[in-house]
Amino acid sequence: MVMTKEERRAYNKAIRDKPENKAKKKEKMKADYEKNKEKLKAKVKAYREENKEKLKAIRDEPENKAKWKAKAKAKSQTPEGIKYDKIAGWKSKKIISNDWDATFDWVMNTKNCENCDVLLENGKGSKGRCLDHDHSITDRPNTRAVLCMPCNIHEGKKRHASKEESYAYHNEEIKCDCGSTTSRKHMNRHKKTAKHINFHIN
Image (cartoon, rainbow, N blue to C red):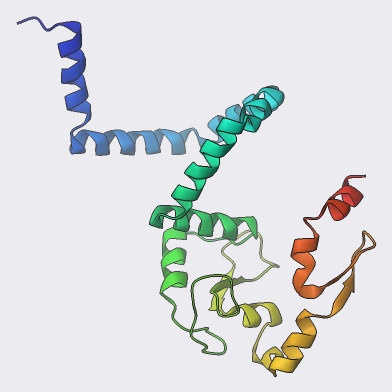
């Protein structure tokens, strides 16, 4: 029996949608990507450079901005999105690992700071989990420990001395190279201000 065009299309879709075939296709795509990773990255980079203005115009369209923002927010709240964002953040800080899945599981399953033993929490507070690493190592895995924020910043219990000392440290005024004065705890926020950005651009 000869199939019509629509029947053939439906038949092929049913074959593609079988779980075992989807899994095979995913593995093949992954293997092809790994094999041609550098070539593909170079191709994408070249395309972005050649079409910079065009892509910017598309990104700046209000409906696209709203759509992508909503999509990114929804994705970041899923387990996969949380994991992706966390690992991307570590990579941006020059943290190196041979097995990111194992590193993520290690960090998220560590209940107490491996330096001061404080109970760790999710989030960015003083008890938030921090992946400590050796900044001097740039060519091999450089993770060291899972710490709370104070231990990661001050490198150990000796800097934990007291709440008063911690408060004084974080609220100490610092003179920025752009001419502004800010507190140590607000330095990252200050670096995003127009004055600081314009100073370094000009």
